[in-house]
Length: 301
Image (cartoon, rainbow, N blue to C red; front, side):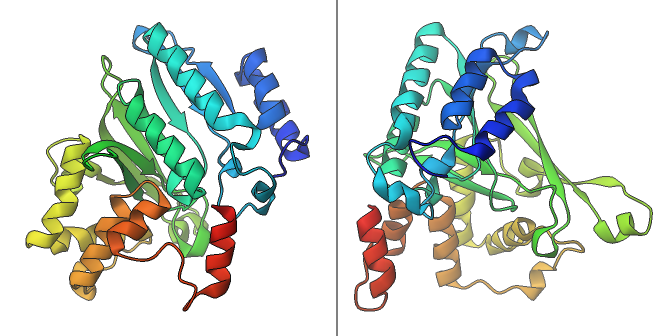
């Protein structure tokens, strides 16, 4: 999408979503593609829960229109901060949704968002992303010491991209804290569906599948750390689950050496693209081996 211009696609989506959103949310979405709204359910547990929907095209590192406005396209970071501040004052809990995970954002935007997550970690309860069509997660970690703060959940898709079976995930949230305590993945076997037998089946529940104590960020970090200490089969299982095809590949068919372990630890422990580069020991700009890509990255950052 372009910056500072009316976008026909967003206007059309706003008309589709209008029955479900407040007038203020529709007006904001129609203009910039982002919005916030309180959850409207009869269950009292949801009384003080707010959804913040981010327009991640305004940080997407493949959106060349952003080169015209790199500081804060359409003021979205400032808006997110104001929304989180207002929720902090009001005692609200926030669930953030978006298409691209922040690791796919331009460096400056991603660093600012990472700082907001750390500052408002007591307000944000859940971050849910799409885009990859895969089972993924990314850890938000503290700037000072790298301690795990929060998890960004990437989710499977109802689409069949690259031959993958459609899937979705159901989160179970604690009624008091609104923090996730379970995440169960379901899938549809497209071969069976095409033969007239469409059945959604449970694939796994995350803490059971990976034998984790809980959904705490520290438990996710410990899970990735265990790969370096004899638990590589669980990493292989996570790689298979990320792919999402069925029937599932056997872990015995995969190999994962020390380099593979390190790469996946860096990938799943990072929420910002430079953070992953630093973890892997790669230069942000490699003008010798990747001149064109480095120049593009330098201009964007």
